[in-house]
Amino acid sequence: SMEFAQLRRMASSWIKGISNRNFYACLREVEFQNRPKMQTEGLIYALSELPGHDGQATRLRALT
Image (tube, rainbow, N blue to C red; front, side, top):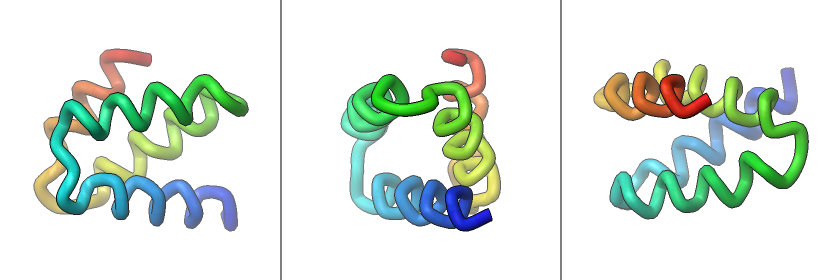
C-alpha cells in the first residue's frame, strides 16, 4: 500500500546514519501520534526487510 511504502522510506531514512538510541527516540515520537499499532507494525516490517537490521526489528517487536 501507499502508506506502507511511506513507512518503509521513513524507516530507511532514519536508519541510515542514525544511532540506535536516536532511532528509538524518533520511533517513540512517531508511534504515539497516529494509529500507533499500525505505524509500529509497518516499521517493524520495513526494518525486517532492510539488510543488517534484523536485531532492531526483533527488539522493536518486543516493545509492542
